[in-house]
Structure formats: C-alpha cells, structure tokens
Length: 425
Image (cartoon, rainbow, N blue to C red):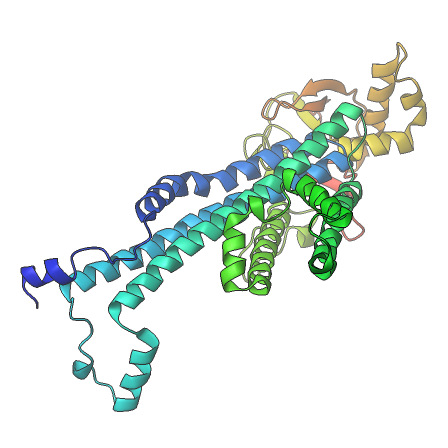
C-alpha cells in the first residue's frame, strides 16, 4: 500500500475534470428522493378521491392529467435514486484511487495476455474510468430532471385546458385537446423542415427569411424549440439527434405506459400476486365478500364508489345502506331511465323527482326480494361525497347469511350486473 505522502500527491485530490456541480447534485438527490418516493402514492389517493366526483368526460381528462403528473413524479424519483447510486459508485472509485494511486496491478490478476489486453483496452486507466462515472452521473441527473420538467409542462397545459373548459362551460374531450395540440405542433414541424430544406438558399434579410424568423420566434415564446431545452440541445449536438430523440421517446413512453398499467391494476378487485388455486373475486360471484362494501373494512381513498353497509354483521333493528352518487354513471342512467325527472330539474319538484328516479335505478333487494324503502339524500362521512341513504328494517330476517343487492350500472358484458353485499344476522 502506498504511503500517505503518495496518496496526497497522486490520489487524494479530486480528478482535474470533475463536474463542478457534483456536490449540489448529491444534495438535491439526497433531499428530494424521499419526497419524490412519497408523491406517487399521494397522486394515487388524489385520483381515486376525485374521479368519482365527475362525469365521464371530466374523469377521463383527470385520469390523463394524473398519468402525466405521476409519470413526472416517478421519473424524478427514479432519476434521484439512480443518480445517488451512480454518484456512490463514482465516490467509491475516487476513494479507491486515493488508496491505490498507481492503478490496477494487471500482472497480479490471473489473466492471460489476450484477456489482459482486452480488459485494459476497455477500461483504460483509473482516472479515465472515474471521469466516465462522473460524467454518467451528471448526464443521468440532467436528462431525468429535464424529462420530468417536460412532463410537468404537459400536465400544466392539460390543466389549463381543463380550466378553460370549466370557465366556458363545456365538457373536455381528449380528442379535442389532441387536435388542438396537433394544430399547434404540426405547423412548427413544417416550419423547421422548410427552414432546413430551403433556408440556406434564401436571402438573409429577404421577406421569406424574416417571415420564418417571426414564426419561429413566436413558437419559441410558447416554449417550443431548443432554447427551452438546453440540455437536449447539448446532448443532440454531441450525441446525435436521432439517438437522443429515440432515447427520450422510449423513456417517456415506458414511464407513461407503466403508470397507466399500474392505474388499471389498482382499479381491479383482485390483488396482484401469485396465489395458486385461490379463486378470483369475479369467478366466485356472488360468494365473494368485498371489503369495499363495509365501512369498517374499506379504504375510502381507493374504494369509495361501491354501495356499503356499516359492518359485515350489523346489529340493531335497521340496516344502514349508503349508495354513493357517481356522476359518470348515474347521470347517463337518469337521462336514459327517467327523462321526465330531468325535465323537472328547474321546477319546484326537482329534488323529489330525481330522488325517485335514483331510487328506481338503485332499487335494493335482500335475498332477491325487493325492499320497499325510501331513499334519503346524505353524504358519505369518509369521503364527503353525496350519497343515497336507505334505512332497512331487518328485524324480521332470520339468523344467518343474507345478500343485499343493487344494480351495478358500469358493469361490462362479462361482469356481474349487481353489487352483492353479504351480511350476517
């Protein structure tokens, strides 16, 4: 092992070309990684709390906004974690170089001459390996942060479109927003192509060149162009534009697809995992006891849409039933089943007519027998959302298992048409 004086002269100082921002990078990653790891879960809770409050068009746009926002959060979290790992590797290399400044003793490794030649060609000297590790960590940090900011920008654009739609009083549609974005981005791509194809042959101060510059400046003012993406401009100019565009598209599509799939599976009743021969919830209908139907078992942040009763074995003379109101399915059902109720919306009988319609749509049955009970308007105490309340007299029910049923309005063809809530007396 070299003495302390050799280490101070040859290995204790940082390499000459060390990235000057490495300390700030470590500080940001170390502090922000914990917040970013918690943010995706908070966004999950937010979308499950907000989605049932809106109609189909609004809930779809909220889901799109959620996917972009969570993709940005996941990308930032992954960037900070990977950056910390890469920086830790770089610090380890710097530390080991301070201990062994003379580098690798290749003659002491059990390698043949050809293997030794190949390894030395690929690795280079230790200082070069340290510089590569340093540059790789900074590049990952810059790319991850820039991509996340790009997704945040897209999220803000979608939110702005939603606010405009809310102010104008129209229901937002994904196809409309996509068409607007295409109408903005498409001409910009055409301008770039015209400038590359014909720009070199145009007079610098000619009318055509001045028009192109005015249009390009207008697009630059709204954020399109390399001026707002200096990191990608640097990478494209030194690493190849095609490679950078392909890598960027691959990362963003992969993250967005992963978030979308996770959102889909979070809404499925069967938990992920390998449970062997245990029957799936859908296969066991109506013998599956779903936690979402019991106030003392459900997670209101994730399972606040299904009808529910207080507990699986209720006591007392009355069974309290709450049916949360869902605009995305209840309003279309009311327009379809009770058009006269909608016609009375502005009249004095508005509430009774709509309440009667909802009571017919969500008619309750116990053990396949209709229940003659009046609905009241109420609120789900756990979520704060409007709900229908029914108090059913169950004093005459025999001891044992019973089933409370009501229609499931959003059921698909291969799914049960009823909610089934087993309970025991």
